[in-house]
Amino acid sequence: MSSAGLGHVASQGGPSQFREEADPVTSSLGMLSCCAGPLRLMAVHAHPDDESSKGAATMARYVREGAEVLVVTMTGGERGDILNKAMDRPDVRANLPGIRRAEMAAARDILGVQQRFLGFVDSGLPEGDPPPPLPEGCFALQPLEVAAMPLVAAVREFRPHVILTYDENGGYPHPDHVMTHRVSIEAFEAAADPDRYQDCGEPWQPLKLYYFVTFHRARFTALHEKMVERGLESVYAERLAAWADEDDEPVAPGHEITTYIPCADYFEIRDQALIAHATQVDPQGPWFACPVEVQREAWPTEDYHLARSLVDTDKPEDDLFAGIREQVLRR
Ligand SMILES: [Zn+2]
Image 1 (cartoon, rainbow, N blue to C red):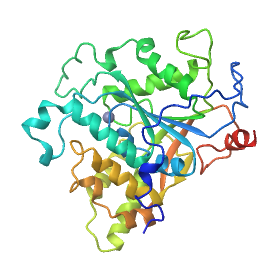
Image 2 (image 1 turned 120 degrees about the horizontal axis):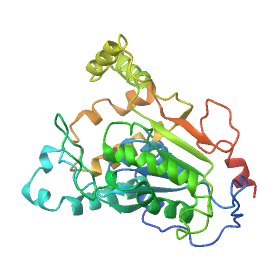
Image 3 (image 1 turned 120 degrees about the vertical axis):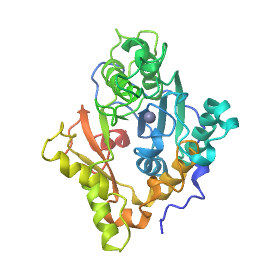
């Protein structure tokens, strides 16, 4: 069993606010030796529930090791479907945005992170051929500077050393995920520039930006093989077969994994956070088809691609703060 029980979760982090006191910040562009105080990690997500399916065990671990972790959620998930049959009821459908906020609050407390909604409206996943136009006013239709402004403000306020986000394909082709990638890059590049987003707080330079690499072939192969070895029925055979078919016609290669974060002791916490998103996740569904102890043995890390770095670091890394930790904690 895990050494990280669920019992002490709520006492850590939770709904606390951004740190108010000022660190001795040198606000010059491109500074590297940046701050005292705890290590700070920001995860930028499109919808409530994304934080629990991508990087959740990583965040749970860093929180419990004393880092400050803030999830920013670009939209309220208003146009999400109800993906758990047990929750598909008229009363739930009538108040989905409110229910998703409550689910997010529960997941936040389980993970122990801070969380903030940045106020955009879910674009929905357009389905059909050709797909219908995106709804007016939604997140994905905002001009980049409008969409990035609250994120730049959040970066300048929270002052993360490390930012996590999606790659340019969004991880999967939801317009809000692609837009989340774009605003994350914009904020990483603009937050330290005093001439940009001038009404959004004091400049701040994050030092590393990572993409989530979560649903990748090496991991699913390892999970599949371990399930077969244990005599369990693997749920990954179909997915692996689809990948094998693609070998004949390679699609765009994914991003190289540069960073493996050991976090197997936190997989139960991740699962509890996912289950808290009850309208989005069926507790009997495929998310939970591979037993945690199998996952722990087969693939005990969550994985990332280091997309931007202003510090030196040796790859592969096993710490998101590699190259940063020494500077921050020395001061
Ligand atoms: Zn999403």
